[in-house]
Image 1 (cartoon, rainbow, N blue to C red):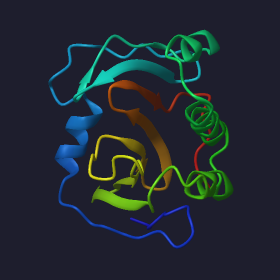
Image 2: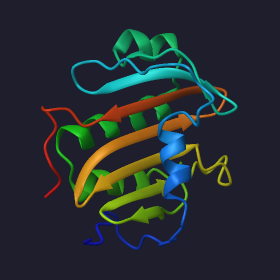
Image 3: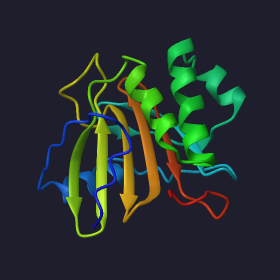
Image 4: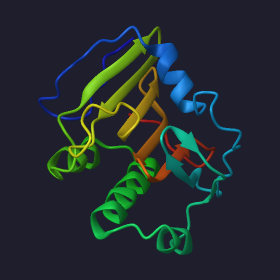
Length: 164
């Protein structure tokens, strides 16, 4: 597998925790919610203490309904731009925002890799912050979680472009 950290000067942490990551993707078995995404692959769900609630497409109305602050709405906008056209300069915007700690390779197994940008306010909570998940060099999934508030999920759709 090619190493594909898209940001500059990112720290690397190898964790034999691919299974843990997959559990987080699936809600850890603690949630019965089935994510419902819009045509762009995005959904927003209530999220508290590791439990994902019922999801809805990520629309402007949903963002207002979850009362995202300006920084959180900006993070969502950055994720939308990354989904539309993955590019290093967009990923660097996450690093430059100062809302997230230095990115780390959270886990990898075979062609799978999960890069984690810890939430600066909750750096020890692996489910919080932003996760970018790749198969080979193609971005497949993103999550952005703020505990006690929401989780934004994106899964690659036919409209998404591969990372090159």
